[in-house]
Length: 76
Image 1 (tube, helix red, strand yellow):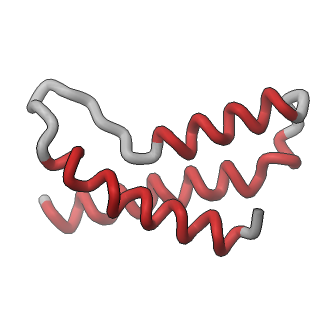
Image 2: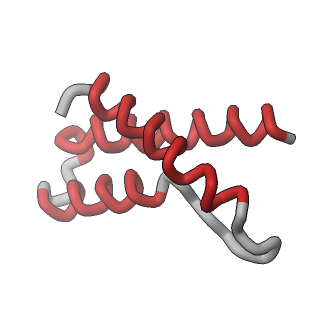
């Protein structure tokens, strides 16, 4: 999976998750990047915990979190 494709998925993941995040209850926790976290964990399991094999997944998760934090700061 190319890094550009993964990054595009992370940005679109935030766009899809934004309404759910904005309308969650005050005490609820919502992480729009959870899908990317799950994918990276699955990759680690598939590849015997070899981090080098899953670097694209880790980068997608970091990119998603970064975009999420930027958007949260802008809307605050």
